[in-house]
Image (cartoon, rainbow over all chains, first blue to last red; front, side, top):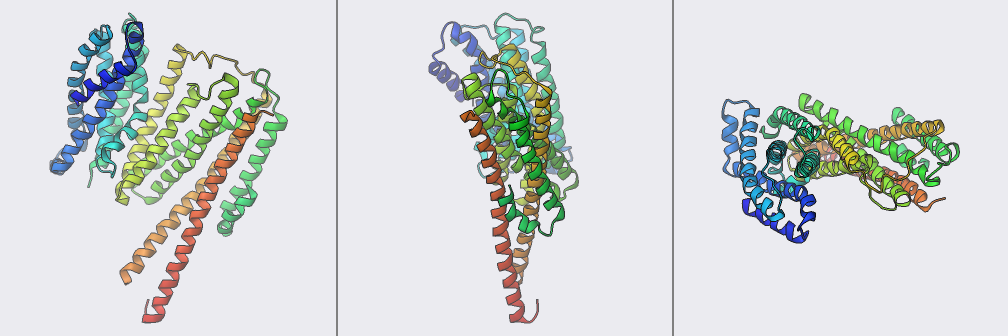
Length: 196
Length: 239
Length: 51
């Protein structure tokens, strides 16, 4: 997933011929697209591994609430994506000559990743049980991730232009609402996805 | 509607409500059509092309309404486990898909002469496109799962999560468009007059009735399919 | 009358027609299968003397 993310970033910059001022406006989009697509890879694999080894049955036998299993998987996926992002940020900053390592951007990154990983975990748990498997996840996930993607890209863009976190407060609030709603729904419905 | 409705009516012959709905829809649709072309005024800036607006907006709203129905049915299915809720959910998605497709295509055809492009990130059009993708994904999910029980369960969960994101998408898109107005959509606005409002409401009523009619037929079809499957099992077990 | 206007309304009709036809077609096929199945059930009843 990490290699893929780096490759994706390079391919995007090459293909879009990013340099100078064009890079600045395109950077948020390129960054988030890369995160989104490499994220689907990581999410698929994370849940496929469980299914293959029968781990999920073991987890289901344990006397824990289904939502706890969801939290475990989701947090794992967030951390996984976080690791990739830690590598991507400096790389993108260097490639596009922007400073991505500022507080505001990191906050937006964290919020966006959280929501994306949460909904992604829920959907991946379903996707691995389908005939199409890995292919199914992006189809299910991307339309649902649109609010988060728009908010994250717009907020990141505004921050890179020299804005403050307060100025993008609206987008941040949208991300927070998205995260809360998604996590709530996922907690309530994850049990129905993994039940036998 | 009458000629094709004849085939559907053959089965609906014993179904009074179905028949009534077909009749009502037919009347409503033709009334709305009449209003669109004869009653509504010719719009000042856009001319006759603006008449697409009425059915375009009506289909977008009904498309979203179908999604609401799917959402409620999905919740009910997970809560109760009764197959009829699943039937309602999937039927509403199928019918809703047609309406949303109408909304997207008509929106595109309206955009071309007015704004010079086949696509514009206008909020209603964009959110309809998003819903179209979600409906398609829902269908693909169902088609991709073997077990009937799992199929229904997964679809219900997806229906719920997906629906929750739609209002959020709407706000995000609206906001995005406010901050970065499309140079192309910033074009001519519409002068709305009362007759136009009446026509829009008529179109909305017509499409809602049409949706109800089609939904009913689709649900009955699904029920019949279930009966057939059960019969098949019965025959197989006796052989 | 704008060509786009005509096209848009043509699309409304076409999509409605496609949907109605699709449902009607599936209904017909279902009825046919149902009739065939019923015939087999009746046939078996005749053969075996019990249902």
